[in-house]
Length: 369
Image (cartoon, rainbow, N blue to C red; front, side):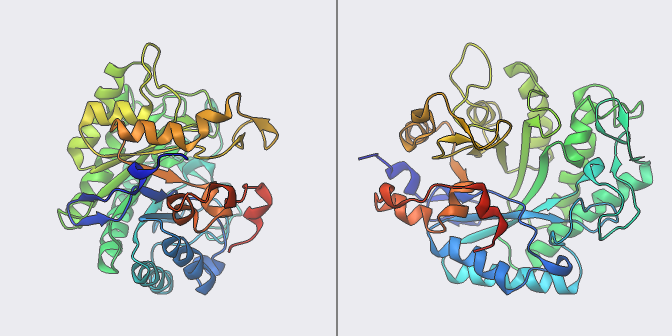
């Protein structure tokens, strides 16, 4: 039987005390009419907490900026109705013994005019580009940057006020913050453009503003990625030295936990080492890290479609995961699609009921259960 004890050891940081190491990964679901979490959304998250997840990171929730949305029925994280809906989610998760963090999100240039809320407002980004070399939206002014920084800070303050246990910044996958990180979409010539240190300034200002807006012991999580939805082969850093130079200013700004988004959690980050991106991040910053990417899946659903089997399904197994956790390569593991198919994934795994786990299929995204 797979040895899974390391997955179910407690974890604590500041005031965040988790019963195990299993995290629910943020996944956009678009089931919030009028951008407000309803009772169906409350039940969706409650079931995962009841199913044994220790920390839920919500789907991306849009900060209070006119161009934040890239899809309809994505929940807001501002306004009386939306925050009241999120308070119900928080209370339901806490009642089941779980902890929860909202993921604060701005879609940036991925937005297209016509999406509500926002209507004809174009996508906002560092240089007006969602894809390298193609201007499709609005290049942000300094006033725009100030507004977005303030929106993230207000979101963090509101999260703490309604009882969330931590807050996550979406800085990955080619959305707004990542569009500043990525030289392919950041061609600015001011202080927010140039080398990677300068391109990180926007994120650093957001982190610093959020840190000032919340209590010192409320953990701030940063989700970041090398890959972009626009280019799966994109990379912000190519060596451990470059990675350290990128991460340390973010850590110093106030990040407490790094959420290292990879398509496959087990893949080495750099040549010459078996360490994953999460492993390198922990080694270089000393901060706790969340690993994520195809946990327990036997197909590659990103990039190659549902028919793309992994070349070695064993790599995606819990054996590989627990071996790395036993070595303290990372602290927490985020499960995404496995939790869509199995709300009680954590409890089933802890009980050794691996044969009872349901295989994930893309059709499950069409419903919220």
